[in-house]
Length: 106
Image (cartoon, rainbow, N blue to C red; front, top):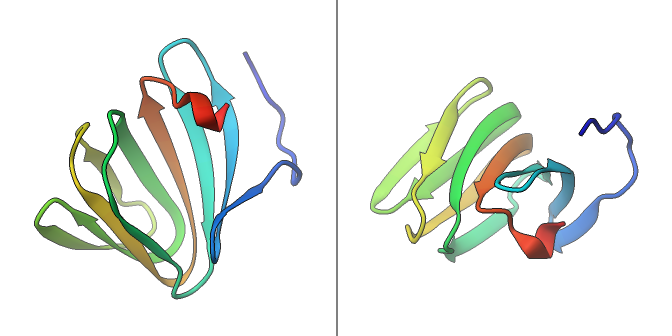
């Protein structure tokens, strides 16, 4: 499957956070998140393993008990069931992959 770039299709996930599913297969799903400065993703957990890459900006990422200052080019992996959240220190773009597929994101 190949999807071409489009500026359409973004959904408001939370205040200051937009998301767009880029592509998905049977076992993985890739999402782009656009975060405004000072946007907060509250601590939460889910059954999906989540890997990510910060494209632009700067975020503070909490994974379990650890807090990380993340800059462009940094990447992460969050195991399924692990409490995590984020705060954008400046306008940021992150790309994340979820496995299994998050059906609500299709």
